[in-house]
Image (cartoon, rainbow, N blue to C red; front, side, top):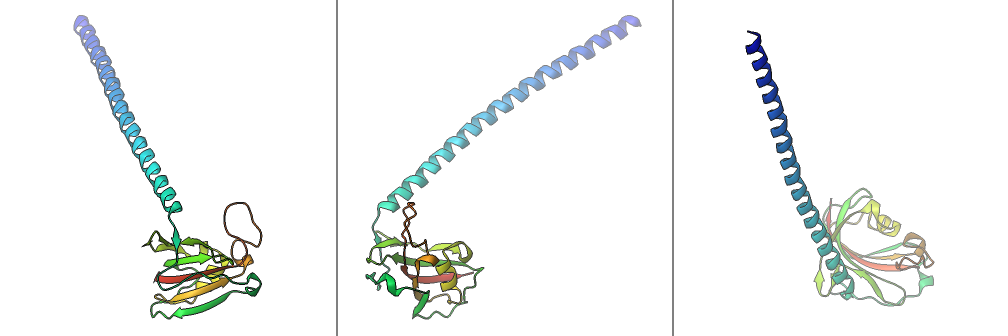
Length: 186
């Protein structure tokens, strides 16, 4: 009886050791496959990031154009002392509030008439969505109350835009003018 008990103990130990070996091998294989998938995912993410950067560079070199039917013109910077909102076309949709997310087509220019930003790049107009609470003060205040479908001209003093002096970050400074078409208000 002692011999049977001893053999049973050995068999149990062998089964336990075999189980540990197979589970370790299985875990190693799972980790290898996950590692390969992680490498593939990281590679795919790197490719996607590179494509996004290439598209942004391509768009940055495209000419920034006014919206059809409108043009940029030079203006006297001293004449823009306060925010001015001029309605060029009245929409009939919901009115934007400071907490709204809006989608818009726009172009903006500096006092010398140079367009520095536009949703019309190379003849392709692509509206952009953004929360009104996360743009320059002149846009937040100027577009609050504007109805969906409207086109407005915003004349914005420098202190409500990117400042009155060059900050060295490539953004325009001083007063700016924008034509903005609100295509959607949420």
